[in-house]
Amino acid sequence: MSEHDYSTKHVEYVAPEPTAEEQAELDDMYARMDETYMKPLWRQIGGLMPNTPEPSAVAHKWDWEELYKLAQRSGELVPVGRGGERRAIGLANPGLGGNTYISPTLWAAIQYLAPGENAPEHRHSQNAFRFIIEGEGVWTVVNGDAVPMKRGDFLITPGWAFHGHHNIATEPMAWLDGLDIPFAHQMDSGFFEYGTEKLTDESTPEYSRSERLWAHPGLRPVAFPGRTISSPIGRFAWDHTDKALSEQLALEDAGFPGVVSPGHAAVRFTNTTTGGDVMSTIRAEFHRLRAGASTTPVHEVGNRVFQVFEGSATAHVGDEVFELRHGDIVNVPSWKKWHIEAGTDGVDLFCFSDHPIFEKLDLARTYTPEGI
Ligand code: 1HN
Image (cartoon, rainbow, N blue to C red; front, side):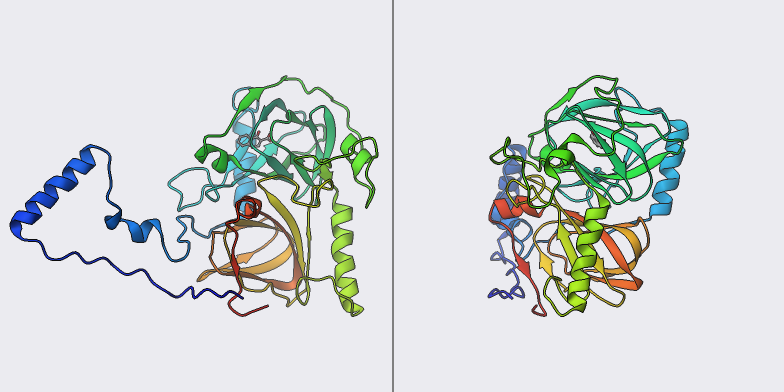
């Protein structure tokens, strides 16, 4: 709960009624300000400093079937290669002026790679991840480490790591990409470089080197002490995530703590050298709700994006209600009250957010109107 009263409202400034002469002078002054790129605060404070965040981004749902069909069509019509770099279709929030921003900070896209195709290597300072909603057969090569991509896996490509992908299977594959592109773009902090067109490692190991070294619970290699900016684990394999979630619910059944709230299990992907988020700007989590369970309604500074992995759910965001099935994506704009209710078979949900940005800058706030 918060000590703040979020119901206070801005007072509209009412200027004293000017005489005709004064009005002419005022008009002239405002015109001159306009011509010289100046703006008086008294005409805009309410918009600049709302009592609580008033995001331009709106809550929106993208239908997986529709996304997949269009990705498939683009696979038939548009080649992938140097220049375009990726056959990725970005999700453009209807409130963000036609930019490919799902939120003011985050990019989300569906990427499609047909059998035998290569997405050439490049690197950028923007952080990226992939979440694999279905399929397998693609390996991504991150700084020379070949990383398998399989159903349920979460993979990271930290900023400035070279990366390219190839599909060695007989089936096409589509997955979700998330990046902090809008944040980098709006802050003018982005850098980009091409790498090789041919992947630096075309092997197809069952586990990446990063997993072989780092992905053993509670153990780290003594040869690599110290902290890394992003997680040293490049791939969080689904079987670990699945097990961690089922154990939380099994412990709940046995009367032990572990779940977030009744019937709501959740894990966060972490940088094992710090215990913090996998990357400096992006948080990633996996949530599992039993049938009939619901998350606690909350307002939060920052932006979330959910993708349904299995099952079905109803998302409530502000006054809107979205029915979600496998693969569907929905976003929660900053400070919009949200909660998610599981459908009749429960739901598995992948979630990513920009919350680390606000936490690092001491700008994070949450408010649970109904208490916890
Ligand atoms: C990118 O490099 C990838 O590496 C995916 O798979 C999506 C969107 C914009 C810019 C670069 C990738 C991207 C991207």
